[in-house]
Length: 357
Image (cartoon, rainbow, N blue to C red):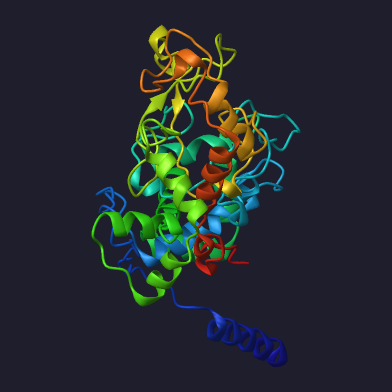
């Protein structure tokens, strides 16, 4: 009996010595925002903390959130593809393909509505959808949270981030939103061009990169901005390389996907979809809400000669009457060269964004 008691208390002591002390004292997280970006608006009910960002990163890569423990958010949003997936449309755990292309997760903390049809107003709200969606991760939130609570490491991380072990889907969404807000891309050649045009002094390293931009890329940039050239600037401007809006960009004369109108029920919204960022555009093929264009060449050809007329066509597409801006082959190649200037290599190689496991 003495030997049994000795072994019991020895094991208790050993376990106690190994057990990590967990406390709730969250540390504010300071975002690394580029100097030419606006300040990100952080929700008052979800302040950024190091503990929250850490937890969100683990959850972003967590396959337990899916019905068969095989899919995570990262399954359709891969870092090397600027958090897109390279597929026309994504396929869920039951082998069912969705009807829309997986959007890149870039600078979402600066945006105010989400999904191609803009149906979610906050990141936290958007994050709740894919888990319970029957053609995506197909898991109830109650089951997903129960699986997380079976993991002592998650219980510790939730307590460190939110001061509770009685967490639910809202805590999961808040943590993941904090992580996604750190996914900031602002270090491409496009950013150097933007800084110079706006009188922002470049560092010596940036100046060397700026001087390496080719004449063809510069010509493409001028076409990009010109109302009589490629005329891209109406929808893709500023440090985000996008406007916040939903537009019909002339893909179809009639619509199989009503876009924004499916949310509003308003016929004037038919064929309108969220304007995507052009950041890292060379990495995020295929393109458009339905992934119909496999290459940048196809996208450029669409805006050059493929614009389709419809009642809700964006009036800012000024040359729609002739099918598009009618670029010649030289101009198309220059524009494509510039679009590669929107690639931010430091973003897709940032170890802070990778799978923590």
